[in-house]
Length: 205
Image (cartoon, rainbow, N blue to C red; front, side, top):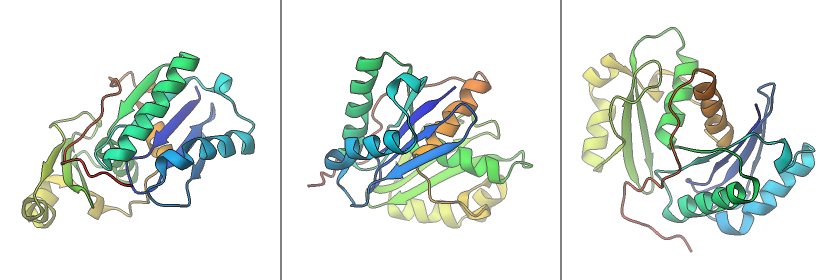
């Protein structure tokens, strides 16, 4: 299967192709907070570099949040337009489950639960997963104090794996695509595309 994955929830955008062999090709924008202006330019570069087109794509994936309100809207609008034009299956993943997936790869021998934690300019977010990446809680937003307690509590660290237990790379759209590939291969549930706003909207001009 080949997957086109889109991640625009952070300050920068990335678009990735995961080909039939599991190889990843990624393009990123070079300017922060320019999701709308750069999206299709990045996509054109990605397709041109790797001789790809919509016809060669089997599945579409978009990161639905949490993160930049504007970025979430741009990514979802773009992928829904592509879905309408191509009729390819479309799935939404959140940034917390993407982080949990990467942690599970880096700590493959562990059977502990995984607590994904993200802190950015929009706020602090967390969600709990089991070692099979099935969610044990809903994603939530926490105030800075609650977030700091969650990060520093020994009990949380002992009971769960977090990004502090591994050398987590900078995440991009390829990780979202690989997560969906994993879920499809393991016949796990995949979600429809629904924006995940956990903080008050912060518009980026």
